[in-house]
Length: 144
Image 1 (cartoon, rainbow, N blue to C red):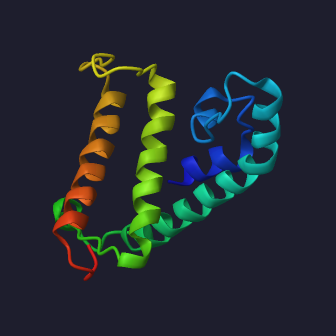
Image 2: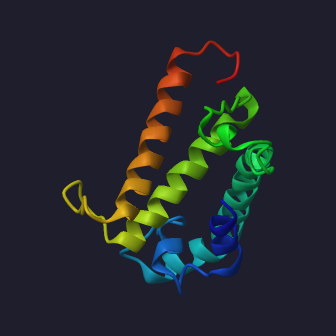
């Protein structure tokens, strides 16, 4: 999460194709309109992505403390996501997957190397994102 936040804060979409995926081009056929749109929206979009990632990072801080004993390393951990934070989590996990897809060269479902452990992280994020979406559909406003 910290690396993702640092990437958003330090990169400009024109210089980093992975970051440019987070700020889509609204007018790909009109360079002038595209530039004007980017100038008026990119900073705000990236700021929102950073704020969303900060919400997720804050929720995960409890899990960064040193373990009391070694047995705690394999104990399951529950993260309770308040309804107010759910959209931030969904947007952040989606954005992280977009950045990873760009870095890994994933453009289609079959662009996948099962031997490369980076794809496992990409798949895990997708699994967690799908779980959150499913939980929100099953949930009636009590937090996920």
